[in-house]
Length: 215
Image (cartoon, rainbow, N blue to C red; front, side, top):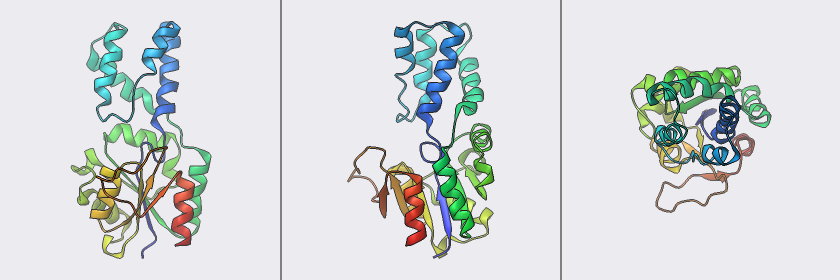
């Protein structure tokens, strides 16, 4: 098997919920919100796909003095600076690089937004290539986005590798369709038997890396 390790970005290499809470705290300080208002801000659920729908509710509740598209655009532009990659995650990626692995990110999202997260967190120092859906014109779980990052890395999916992510629907199903072994991040959840089954389930990126290095 090729030493190929592909990772999802959001809720895998970076955690969106703490980043959102940092953004919300900053927003609250700027607008002098009450504790009850803070509760509304913190109700945003990042497990829902359509984040813009939830931010539209926030926009309406607080009667923000700008149209929603401007508010949403400012959120998308400002949010990446609140994103963090945890030290154990970066250390795990360093272990892979030190052992000669090719490392890629496969993520659905907007080019500017996702690239900002990758650069501002320092992930760009650990990752060799990225495939972002807006750039590639195709989203996970489509096999073609995995082929795109493999081509950038100069490897072929036919030689195998690993895909690590938090979504059975996107990361596990997509990785399997690409011929890769898969590792699913549990994050306190149970596997959905109706969705694609991963090769392994783990609780963290460092645990996933340990598996890859020892198998």
